[in-house]
Length: 248
Image 1: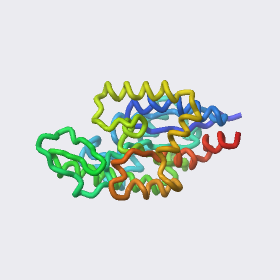
Image 2: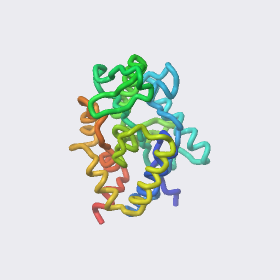
Image 3: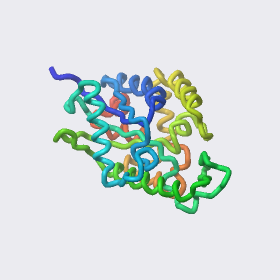
């Protein structure tokens, strides 16, 4: 019998895995699926600020596949071990109109609000938003990635406006320590509470299908509002843990 396949989550940092690792593992286990694995890229693969100026949407799929290959090589795994790939990304208000990026000379940290982002570098932030939103739109329409000549099912999940806002309703600009504290608290609360975790995902989810969730977040200022399409993403996986739990 071959090895059981797993879902690979590509995430920005350690706090993504810290917050969601136990909860997702419990959810997958309740549907008799192996726990997911996490590939940490230590930065925003969709953002110009993370990767330098050359970061067009036309190369986002290749860069994502490169990240997958790096993870597989590090853990001595094969492409055939993958059931699906999920990219987890913060929205960071990337889809808002340029007019909602507001100049404030005293705000180098770019605080987010429900209807605007304040910054001392308007042009730079608008460029970031254009790059990030273009990459995310490309990925939202991508349903498989080709890795070592094999096609692997793919979905993109978002946290709006970021992980801390979506999961913990924390709207401030979190320090790294605050991010760790919130992630640990979330894991402690939902790590083994599958029903509670699913209820939260349902609360955060916009109405409609996986594709509808991306139409929603790209509209108006929704990418600054609290929400996530993790529910729709998990439902759309080939071996959906949510559907498996619902059938029990």
